[in-house]
Amino acid sequence: MKFQMWIEKHTTQLTAVSALLIVLGYAGRYLLNAPLVYTVSLMVASIVAGIPIFLHAYQALRVKVISIELLVTIAVIGAFIIGEYNESAIVTFLFLFGNFLEQKTLTKTRQSIKSLTEMAPTSAELVHDDGTIEEVDVDDLDVGDVVQVKTGGSIPVDGEIVDGQGYADEAAVTGESRAVTKNAGDTVFSGTLLSDGYVKIKATKVGDDTTFAKIIELVEDAQDTKSHAEKFIDRFAKYYTPAVLVIALVVGLISRDFKLAITVLVLGCPGALVIGAPVSNVAGIGNGAKRGILVKGGSAMDTFSKVDTFVFDKTGTLTTGKTALADSKVYGPDANQVLQLTAAVEALSDHPLGRALTQAADDAHLDYQSLSIENSSTIKGQGITATVAGHTVCAGNRKLLEAHHVQLTDEQAQTLSQFQATGSSIVIVAVDTQVAAIYAIADTIREGLKDELAELKKAGAKHLVMLTGDNTQTANYVADQLGIDEVHADLLPQDKVTYVKKFEDEGRTVAFVGDGINDSPSLATADIGIAMGSGTDVAIETSDIVLMKSSFAALDHAYKLAKKTVLNTRENIFISIAVVAFLLLGLIAGFIYMASGMFVHEASILVVIFNAMRLINYGKNDDKEKSENVANLTAVNSTK
Image (cartoon, rainbow, N blue to C red; front, top):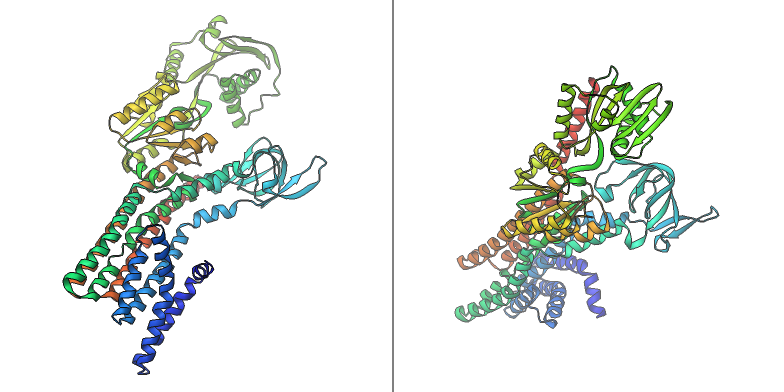
């Protein structure tokens, strides 16, 4: 056991020794004219490089697995029997050297995951009740503890800021490496960085329960979850390797050429075929992880690439989930003055429509809080009235205005109808018995969403469907704005599940995109569940793909990445089979021998690895182009 562990630890050194012995052997033959040096050096090189291979073959046989190493072991023993020490030395060296390069290149594909784990904080500055600070291990923190984080520090817990302010780089969670302003009351995540400022955080999740820890666990598990192609290759290799042994035996019996039979064993090794699919999935999953796209394994990647129907929740997915002033028509002489008076009245209420209008006034930097207010009155189901800075202000619906003897003109009535047709909620404002403004308030559509949905269609999506609990009028308006193909409104969560099953029964491959909380039944029912950006436990546990950055650009990239990863896997399988066919044909034709065939075989392994590594940088050109477009747009705007 200790010997095997020593061999495993020093395999790289053994590979190097084998290479030196081969060089020494050929030098002895061609430079020193010493045949004994040549023979002994190559024999020792074969044994040195062969030991790790023999041990792996033995361990595989113990669990009743006929491995690639067994094929090479038999081939090396056969080469010794017929005295072809040069063949055995070169074969064993190339096999070990191929494994060495394979591990090096595979390590590169896992760098994104390694960088994630390295970002996980190991210590925290705990703030005690008496104000003293103690540095503790993150595993010793409990929910409710308060920790402090200074500029440049890593946030050790999920929690809420209770004191201080700063800017957090949340790339580890959202994939977007820009500073996000954080103030008291804001939520922060473990593993993110406080790029500037000072904060105290009350822990709501610690240790393995934090969002960051779950992300690491999810991505690591995903890389071990096999795709359909990998499972097929595993089954194929299980029968293929024994078949090669039988073929070599038959060739040897028929041809009476022992060397030819041994060569068949070496060239029949399915190394590139076995490694091709896993490395593609590892690279694809790693690419997504760097962008805040968490894919639960190769199987999810494979299924996602086949999706033809995207089903979307509306509120919080296609829309921002926050009501805001969407449109307005002002009839007073000063739009800011009307909004200021309106905000002063609405500030007396906690109604969502009122909050949208006060937010609009805040965004316009209007001082409405200092205005004097008298005789305020709230009429349930109608609105609110008050005397503001000497003006009588009514803000509400048409019934409120009629009760105060304010009538809409035909033009104003037409504007009201147009706003209502969009599914917006309406607030009509009258100042001193005259209609001063009509405000349309709605859950706003995500910026740039229409173009991003069009990109999904270009990438292969055939049906875009919206399922929502909202009313039909609002749903149709949003769908028309975005180019959604099919709309179903006034639905309960169980109704959405029914539609998802219906689409699947029609033979469609369905991806459901929701917020990961109230849509969890649909996320679980669909072929692929995609949670948009919430980062909650429900999102991570229920969905197959989590977009930590609530972005449809990320969804577009994930969909294209899935298709590219599956295509890359197929390319690797084709390359692998083509190389084996070429080697066997070359062997029959007489221009391929054991050493040269082993060289081509190991080279094919590297080819499929390097082909898969292209996935690591997939989408970088698009990112660069978008950054340049943003920079150009900013430059144009600054010159205006």
